[in-house]
Image (cartoon, rainbow, N blue to C red; front, side, top):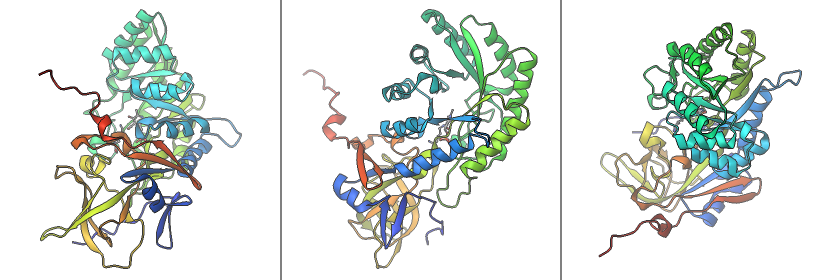
Length: 432
Ligand SMILES: Cc1ncc(COP(=O)(O)O)c(C=O)c1O
Ligand SMILES: N[C@@H](CCCC[NH3+])C(=O)O
């Protein structure tokens, strides 16, 4: 079996020069030597450029702002990452009380926060209302009533938007599709108008917007336009009924290239959506975009060291010190990530399954990869900036890796490596 001929994604901040891979101006091998492996490494340049591409498309040729980016921090919520985006002008899409706490910890303006999520608890709703978030995106009629109750108890108003489930196929992995009627997310399309009418009658609720998010790693603009048309139809109906919407939240979900995917570029994608909104006569609405992966996915790599090479009759295994605990995407979605040795060697290559040390056969990071490697070599697992560290676990009592942000010639530890004693320091044994 030979490895698939899949091209490398466009990594911008991670480049190969004379057989050595760099993060911006620093050889990745220097980072591994100094900080150990497994190690997440991010490039500030890449995330900055991705943000600027969105932001530029959000402003029209006369300088008028047409839309605002609210980074979906679930993709990568490290404080240094979200602080970079805040300084670039981003708001945030949140999905838990924990993410709200992160946003407040970096001093984000509460009015730049939208709070989504299918199962917000009463406590989380109260936290969001007390903080004064811009909007809570409501995902069910039951939740709408819960928000009204919490706001009544707090004696405050609750700004809300309904998340529409438009029943549109985002053409992505079924686990990350969210806009089909069989998905748990949002309010069924045919129930949305009825729910708005109900919301308008509730004592503490202020209807401020409408929201839609159809999935993640979407590489085609057509499903977005289908969903947008359906949402705009609702806005038209609401207007007729005298229910005014101030903002339209188009969600996130734009895919990145992990290799041979071919998503539209950020500028083209954003312009297409914003132009459609304007053409339909809704250019006056505040538009919210919630990208996650497309801002950070190709801004990060996971460095790992080859522990053992294990030849076999059916498969050769390249056993590395990273695992599904550090990068869960291959195990969970059979996701493809490019894998490159960070120092090119003139040795014979072989085809390997790249696997981790965790006790699961699902613990693999790459299958059938042609690699010229020896034990002790370092590999970079590419496109790991989104849904990488944030989905890491301590399974098998493995400490989570460190995270490093590179900015030009400087490297900053933005999360220290966990140490093993900390993993069980809050546990106790029973008395004798
Ligand atoms: C409501 C909402 N907004 C934004 C995002 C960000 O998605 P992505 O990282 O695919 O851009 C998600 C995740 O799918 C989400 O659930
Ligand atoms: N965790 C998913 C994306 C989920 C998006 C959140 N709704 C991934 O790694 O691709």
